[in-house]
Length: 189
Image (cartoon, rainbow, N blue to C red; front, side, top):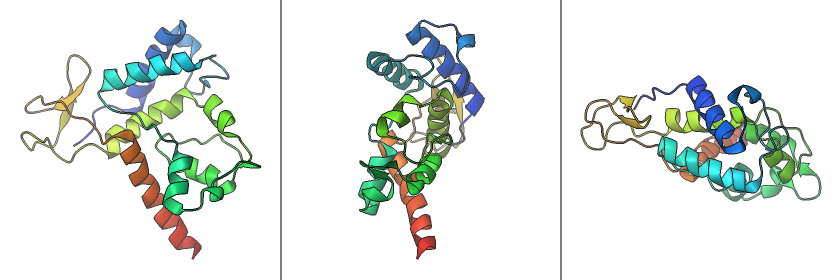
């Protein structure tokens, strides 16, 4: 199904949700604001924000990290992350390709560095990519291929108003990483 929600739409909605959770004004948050380092989000803020995000858009966020999933898929987790030296070059490239499109990370970053520097735009990219790439091809009830936003802001079938949701976040992330890794590993051989 075609996703009517743009990346900008997600940025706007997520900024407002973060402002509400963190007690900030939306104009204090930019797309490049780092949720921990810049905005001061703490673990309970993430719990509340993630629950609100899933409820608002009727989907399930990935629970497993892209690095962990890529390590399991490839059978070589050290290709992407080393507990001694941090994020590898391959890990940096992998995170650029994951649903969240981390484009600002550097080799050597620790897991906590990655988490602490997650930006608002990364969350918007995650949501937009899930809804743009992992919606069902057609409505499970009527077979229609277009979706629209309901007055409550939920994605529904344009024809019969059945709620529409993307693939579970972990499944979508795994599918995307498998494609990326198959292509990358094939090129390396």
